[in-house]
Length: 58
Image 1 (tube, rainbow, N blue to C red):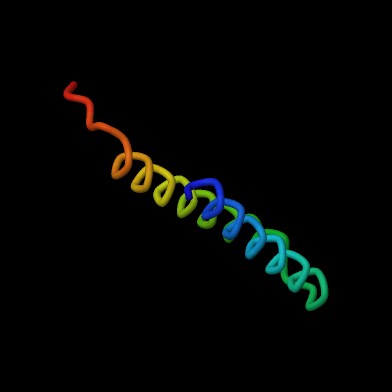
Image 2: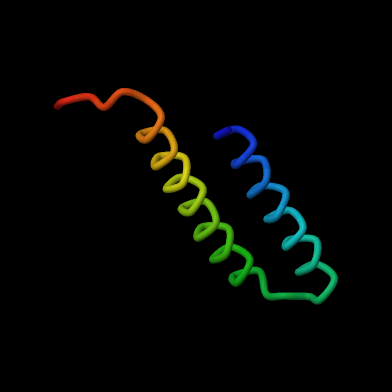
């Protein structure tokens, strides 16, 4: 499930990048969206990972 989710987000991001290329969006804006998207993927993966696996007590 997690792999499918990450693939879906990656494909969405890829489509956004292609769209940005077509409309000539600034590079810094692309970088900002890449960072935000990366953080979202990490948070979703962390949430999915902690929800499906046994919780560890630190």
